[in-house]
Image (tube, rainbow, N blue to C red; front, side):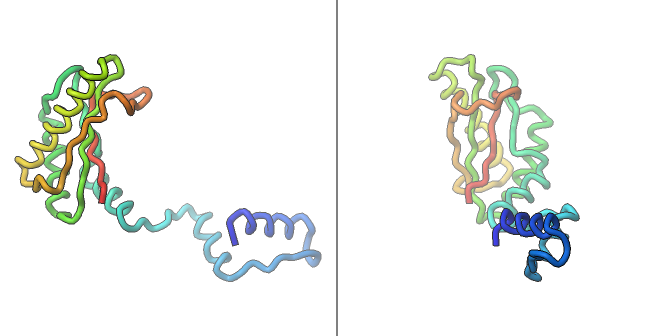
Length: 160
């Protein structure tokens, strides 16, 4: 039974009143509905569980850069140290480091600086002991802007 059909069955039962057209709700549904009402989150598995753990332990997957820069500041290096620690503990995980640029850059410049940002993050993670084979660096240029956010960034994305 889909959630829509469950809700429809419940609504029909309450509209018709007791004794007329009552719908019997299967026991499994009776157990699922109260859990949903209590605000419980479904259990994450696989790559989704790994992403959630990565974000919880490192704080973020996004590295911000200032303007036309590719330099990593001290707060960023501290955050990358947390990411490196997690990645060393999970050698089975492969990540893609995506370098991004602001939309005001020309396409060629955006691709070049995006590549430098991704390479800078990858190099620093290697310096912190993450195997190079565990990471790839790609430039997204200005092709995937985030509205209202700083687009001079690199994003560490768990692939598998």
